[in-house]
Length: 340
Image (cartoon, rainbow, N blue to C red; front, side):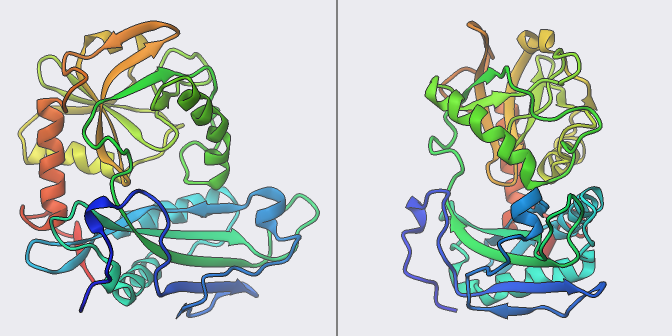
């Protein structure tokens, strides 16, 4: 298939309308079969549950062109599982995982001309989402829902590429214990907008959120999990019931153990420990891994030995291995790469 005429190597992380999107509606207790449509507009009641009480969830994933020319997605079953968990927490009907994976496959295939070529540094971002569509005026779940998937070709999430980021410890809380921090709900991200705008205005790239109860433990940023490397080469990621179970983070832990022969653990990480780590990164679907050069704690700079000029050596190995798996140059574990 002939690709669209797009400057792939200079794409930003923004929305470009593609040709098709998937739509399925939930009415009378059941999902319909769903279909592809060229209409990018969403028409709903002014009193729709999503507009009144923020009843919406979403996922983020990517499609890639591999070295041998195939179009693939990365672990879409885990995105489907996470979306089911998010739906349960917000009293929404789950869109079944098997139908989720098939809908992703259909949508990506229909937009194959927008999947960036191998080696361009760009990917096709895939956004499945669901929202309450029927009118709701009392505080309760909606009766009807719409599940949709759109795609858009994107470049790097952070404009600087592998230039290490400067993070500040935020005075704002991202999620409360036993709240909704562990699911991918739109309301979580709405709460982070003021904090990230304020961080940017102060010259920082992102926020480091701490646990709301004690403000002693590292949790995550507004849109990515943290990953640390100790001075003796161990990979460490924060463990908390209030952070999103990142598919990228889980994959990197497995890559560290099974491909690189490294020790890796998920545990509570305390702010007091930051000075003892050799490397730090942010990991998630959008960026894969973005290196962090320093964390600023209310004026006190905590600088990682990996520095402010390039990605740390262990973080680079993790990045190269995971992206190699995604792009087909390294053999993937069973089920990780799904061909469209």
